[in-house]
Image (cartoon, rainbow, N blue to C red; front, side):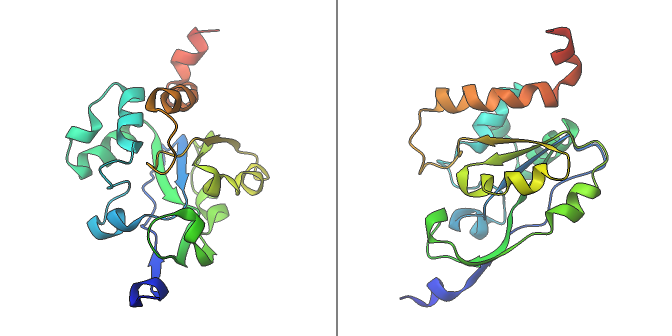
Length: 174
């Protein structure tokens, strides 16, 4: 065991505002994200291309702060279900001794919240507890490169966010 394997890893603060309609929850930032101090910083993680495709913006080309601003402008927030844990590497299967974030407190602070989407199955294990607060939930295929599902298949699944990001557009489609 290396010294890093026993070190606790902590998530980042939530990226939300009073206009957040969609909250995307991951599990816990991976090594590349923790080193960069940015959500989804691994170059092969498909999070930014997936949301960029949905928003029709080149999010990966923008500086990180502008990416976050774009998400907030579109009513999208980010956080993680795990506040801190021990983990060797970046795989969710290696998460040990986890402590969870106070999701009920955050949910109560978001008056416009319509959907909590989980980025992958590990985060998605919390969908029932979130749904108990009367919020719609959706478990998405992970944007991680560890999930080898083709990008086009991930894009099709992530398209389900559109009706919550663009509610007026969705109403026109009925």
